[in-house]
Amino acid sequence: MTRVRLGMAAAIAALAAAAASSSQAARSCGSVTVEGTRYPVRIVSGEVGCAEAVSTLRGYIADAVATEGWSCARGHFGQPYAARCARTPEGEIVVEALNPEEVAAPASVRRGASLDVTASGLDAGRYTLTLVADKVPARGVRCLANVGAPRRRAQLGWVRFRGRVPRRLRCYQGAGTSLGAVPAHAGAYHLVVGVKVAPAAWNADRSYLRRQIRVR
Image 1 (cartoon, rainbow, N blue to C red):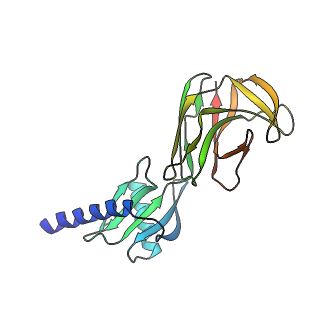
Image 2 (image 1 turned 90 degrees about the vertical axis):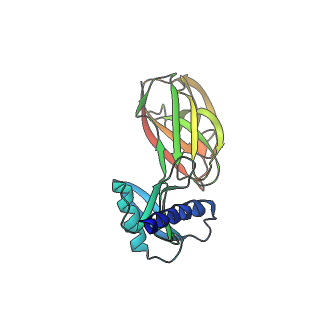
Image 3 (image 1 turned 120 degrees about the vertical axis):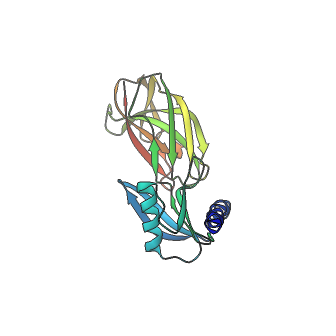
């Protein structure tokens, strides 16, 4: 029994140590998909096959139960992984499933209401949350408004925005020619998380995430 407890303690210590180490030496193992969500997989330390790494992480993400011989933990906001597992008893092998590219937000909101949005799996950069109307007044025109503080720096792939749902939008022809402001009518919109290079344009070399939302 003492040996088992020591093994678990070693595995937990390995998880903590790996979290503090650089990811430059990590080896990519493709990805694992659970309930439609894709998680990139990597081996952080030790020698293990990709098939075993993927299988171990898939089982834990799906059922929250670690495979025999492994100790696993879920990631939280600010950590670069969604799940991390270490081989017991020594914990010398560590594998992890990175956070998916995902925007967490409510399905619908009221105009003027507070809005709390979290994005994960982002490249390094300064991100802005933008509400973009699906209905366009003319070809090549987009009506949109930023939500919360702009140009927030991603921390380990995470960024969080807090603000209020805009009551007015500004319409642009192309990337930045302003055509004036219009009311934000009820209807279908998208939330866009990206690195802006103009009022209505985003950096194609950085993460660009979209999520449908309905404004009431």
